[in-house]
Length: 465
Image (cartoon, rainbow, N blue to C red; front, side):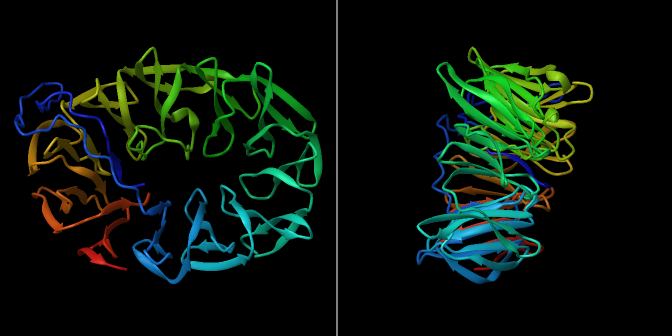
């Protein structure tokens, strides 16, 4: 992903805004900076996808936007969207029960009167329920060939797809766990998912809480206690992260769980992603779980950790929050002690301190520009060496919603107006009003103004809907 930003909702802890490299330099103080936290954002009308965005207008029409263009086909009342990991496919369902497959900009009707369509991580397979006799049939759909086949007409309680979409694991109400048409064992309480070997993780409740189990064709393996039936896969669905006794553990393809760190992980970041506004990331689209940077809270202290093979960890920084990695995963940016922006090079642990009193920040893809907000001011500085910040915008209220596009143009909102900034220039107003601002994971920006949608292109903003 070409943009790297971190939109924070933390209040200013100090009114001074002091930027520095290792040779600390004084920079301007902002006397008008507000100590109140920014106002909470209004509900986002978009369904966020890696490439696709679905906008619902006042008439209930769902318009599908992809890479800055609008698909000619519109759907009514889209209720759910499931995406493949690489963004090449998405499964959509409507309130009327229609299931659609979006491949690039091609929209295909899969089936009607469908319930709960699920798309595999790869985007190659899809599963859904459709009426059959007095009940429902579980169907499998091959996204490449368009072929559909019935998996079972038994009453299914829960299901998960294998990462490649070639297998379905499901539990039935009569107490069985199946992998495709083969019964494996007694049905667990919660299906967590399948790994890249086609084996199944699940949680089983016992009098003392939950136990993590791993099901293969040869039997079921008990991996020990879990605090809650909550777990997260890495990108390749090989490793599973979960919580036990207040600590974070990991297991690799059913291997003996190893403790990564004390405390519960609250922000898990692969390269190029940023935490949500409340500082957490709930999904883990990562290439290698052991390259994750995340914060862990223990006794009220947030720490920046780096897990390694075998469960070994390195503490990178204490009192570190809101981290984000650059595109290569070589550098991590974070707030130290709530408002001091720093970066750390993972290869040798060297750090740079940029500024204090920071509310939000955004780093361009080449790291050459670092945008910082302090209350009502926006500053730009060298993202590699630090140095003295240069003010590029000032207002009388806090700035909201920093968003970087794929070509490193920065957009933000102030007094409901939309501004942009690029290169070494000052910020300029683009729209006198902007209701919502969002970007897809590949850096496509959309601005919502009343009934009009704008997108950013080579010539700036232009309406597309």
